[in-house]
Length: 340
Image (cartoon, rainbow, N blue to C red):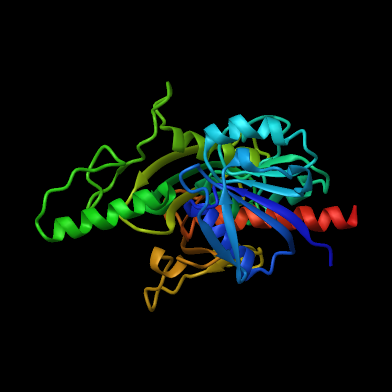
C-alpha cells in the first residue's frame, strides 16, 4: 500500500491534536509526518502512532517538496499567509479556516455529500465550519426524499469550538463559581460558567453574526442549493465538547413520513438515530462526545404546519465537524489519487 508524506500546521491546537489521534485510530498510511506550530511550541515533541515527532515552525520546513498532503489547522491568518506559497508545491491542501471556503472554484467538502469534487490531483479544498458540516450531514439524506422550502436552525455550541483556551476558561470559571470566587473572563466578553450567550463573532449588516452567516452560506454551498432559504441563530453554551442543533425543515410539498426520514438517515453513512421516547433517550453532548457519528433524534412532524418537520442533532464537532472530516477528505483524495 502506498504511503504518503503529510504535514499538519497547527499540530498543537485542539483540532491538530484530534487529527493526530484519528491518524492513529484510522491507521492512516503515513510515510513521513511534519508537525508545525507557532514558534513558542517549536522544539517540543508529540507522540503519534508510537513515534515521537518534533514540532517545528512553518518557516523551518526544509523539505516541502516531499509533502503529499498538508492540513492547515492554525487559523485564518496563517492560511492566508502560507496557502498561496504551498499551492505552488504540488501538494494536496486541506484548509480548516474560513478564508477560502466561499471562493467559487475552491471545493467545500463533506465527503459523504460531495466527495466527488476531490479530483485525486493536488488541489486546495476547504473543511467547512463545524456547524455547517453537522447540519449538512443531517439535511443531505432528507433532501433525497423531498425538496426543501426553508430551514430554520439554532445551534448550542460547546467550548471546544473555541479550542483548548476556551475549554480551560470554562473549567476554571466553573470551579471559581462553585467556590464563590470572583473571576474575570480572559477569552470571552462575558462569564462562561452557568451562562449562555449569542455567539461572540461580529454582527454583519443583515443582523447575523459571523458564525450564523458561515452556517447559512456554507450549508448552501455544500448542498449545492444556492437559493435555499436558511435562517440561523448561534448560541454558545457551557458544555466542554459536542455541539447541538435544533432544526426545522419546511418542505416545498409532499412531506415525507417520519419512518421514511428515519430510514434515509439511518442508511446514510456517519449518522446514528438516537430517538427513544419511552426511555427518554435522545441526542446529548454527553452521548456524542468522542464519537464519530452525528446523533439525530426528536424527529416529529409539526402538528399545525403540514409541511414542517423538527429534529435535534448532537455531534462532537472536534470529530466530524473538524478533524474527522479533514482526515476523511484526505482519505478520499488517497482513494481517488490511487485510482486516477
